[in-house]
Image (cartoon, rainbow, N blue to C red):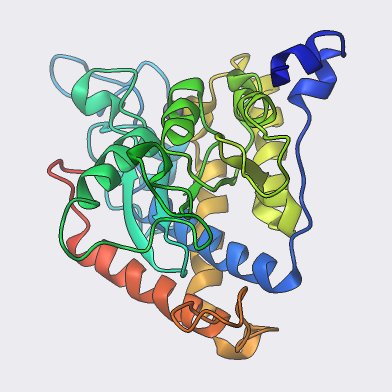
Length: 316
Ligand SMILES: [Zn+2]
């Protein structure tokens, strides 16, 4: 009997519900740090001009999301937002992958606009590259500790994806094909119909020792990441005010940008003394795994690397 049969006579709410697992306080702390890092990266590359910058042919953007005004206010200078005054390159959505020991493998941004495509999502681009990287000699510890990996279909079972926006069907599908461990997301996307939750539930195994093929979706609210609620709250207001439910338009607004900037500030001032579990890790017997103190160092190092060299063959 497949999982689909099991849900056939249940209400839809049973299929789309979150699948929470117990997350230890140590793990919550490391999720929190990685999530601050991801929001910092989005803030750094922020682009506010979804309709493009004004030029002679197209004198003004058809929609002003507030940032153009913010840019023109001398008493409120914006230090960050590398692409604030540039033409639009892609949505303000990013993702990175973390291996089983806590090292960050790589990142990517949404590039829909550059490629004039609706499938160049951050997670899809990221996952495709990780499959390629696995073929280099010095590979990351992407597999699980407990199972021998015999197929590329199990390759990513130790990998956690962090994404700033809940994943779509395409990206959830790629993560499922790669058997990724979990996907942690910083904002709900109501336009994706909880597809990540559905795929997780339908691919769960009856064997408690085997993971589902799909990654378990982990909403950042499950580890008290306050920016999750702030983004949801501002998005609701945006929908009412602008009479649109476009989340990528919301992610061009000043209100959204300020939330990401606050997260960036928090990471910048976050230091070892703020950690409750500096010397803890998830598996005490794993010598290679990073402690939370090392996770913080890794995150700050990665941010510097990203800001200095984080190009992926495109301007964004
Ligand atoms: Zn996607």
